Amino acid sequence: MSEDLNAEQQRAPGFWRKLVQALEGMDESYVDSLETRIHALEVEVARLGALERRRSNFSTPDSTWRG
Image (cartoon, rainbow, N blue to C red; front, side):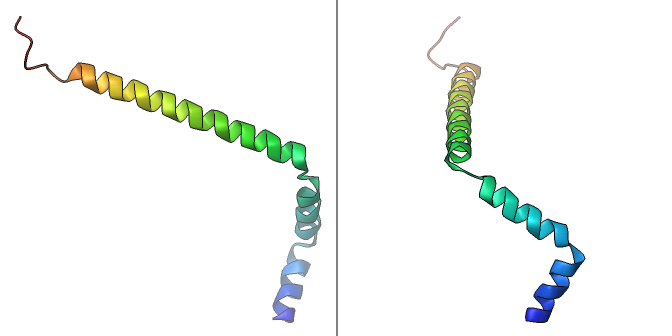
């Protein structure tokens, strides 16, 4: 198993260093920013879902309406 890991590291030596640097760079401000963006997306999905439901309610004919 150790040989497999060494082979992987030799194939992409810069990858592991870059991965460690990226993980070290994920501080609390990055996580907070990510959570804020996720929340904004959730709000937008809910808003679009409500619009879609309203649109489908308007597109179905009302059987009580006599024109």
